[in-house]
Length: 134
Image 1 (tube, rainbow, N blue to C red):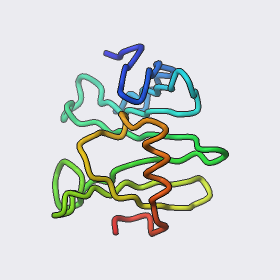
Image 2 (cartoon, helix red, strand yellow):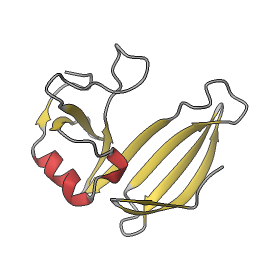
Image 3 (cartoon, rainbow, N blue to C red):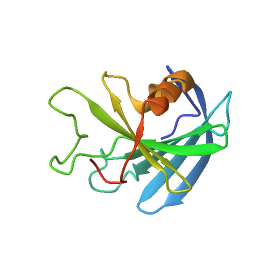
Image 4 (tube, rainbow, N blue to C red):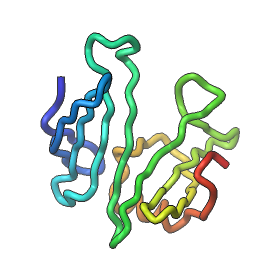
């Protein structure tokens, strides 16, 4: 099952592509206003085990830079992402040229809900670092 349109805090996302990628099914949504901004969902096929698990990435275009924005999973937990004792979540921005930036986020909003303005604020406060969790 797929939805043609997702309405999120960040705007209206239209289903642009559905790609088979065994055992997954990849859905690519594009922002109605800025088609270069994308949400990628890797959903397992109905008959696959662990059908409740999925993967998600957000792509965001800022000027000439296309960022992949993720909250990396916590290697110490089966599900979920790393949250520091202070309540800070580490958000990773990765550019095609290899630049990796880390931003600290405090709140309950999900990546798909961040508006362009909120992503820009996060990115402006980010610092360079290695790709793996720091």
